[in-house]
Length: 311
Image (cartoon, rainbow, N blue to C red; front, side):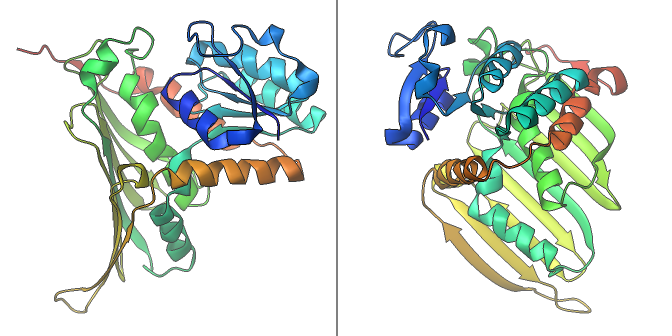
C-alpha cells in the first residue's frame, strides 16, 4: 500500500519507519526532512493511504481531503471531533469504499490481546474490578510544547488509551463515568487525571499522569476465579503478563507469568491489521470513537476540576 505520512513528530517518525518500503511521501510544514510541506502538492494517483499524525485541530480537514480523494486513512488517537463531524467522515469513507481508522496501538500489545481472549472465555468468571494506570515523567516536555500543553493534556494523551482499552476488552460495552478529577500541578494543562466508572457492574478506576517520573503502565482485572495483571509495554521492553488463579476459600493463588520483550510489536501489528482492513475494504464504524469523544468533551461540564499551584 503506497503510503504518505502527514506530520513528522515522534509518532509520525515511528509510523514512517514501520511502513518501510510502502512509504512514498511525507508531509510536514515545519520539519525540513519531509518531502512535502503541503498535502496539495502530493501526486494523489501514486498514493493509496495516508497516516495522519498532526495536532487535533487539523485532523478533520486532512481526513476529509484524503477520504474525498478515495484514500484510506489511519489517524493517530484521539479523534475529538463533534458528533456531526465524525458521522460525516464515517459516511464519506463508506461512500468512497475506503477505510478510516483511529490508531490505538495498546490494543495490539500481546498481554492485552491475551487478556481479551481470557475474558471472552470467562476464565476469570464474573469480573469485579479493573484498575489501570498509564504514566511517564514528561511534564516538562509537555510544558515546552505549545499545542500539547492543552486544557485536557494528559486526559487526551494517555488516559484516552485506557478508556479505549475498556471498550476493547469488554467488547464495546458502554463505559459510564461516575467521577472524574484532573489536576494541573506543573503544567497549564492537566498533568494528572483520575476516572472512576462502571462497565455493566464492573468497577473501573483509571489514572494517567505526566508526574510518574518513570514510564509506567499497569492494568489489573480482578474476577471471581482469579486476577490478571499486566505491567509495562513492549516498547519499554518490560511487558509482563501475570495470572493469579484463586484458591478457595482463601490462600496463596496459583501464579503464572509471561514476559514479552519485543519492542514496537504493537505498532507493527497495528499496521498489519490496518493493511488487512484496506485489502478487505472493511466497513467503517466510528461508534466507539463517538463515545470516547463524547466522554472527553463532557468532562469539564460534568465533573469536578481543581487547580494546584506548585511550590
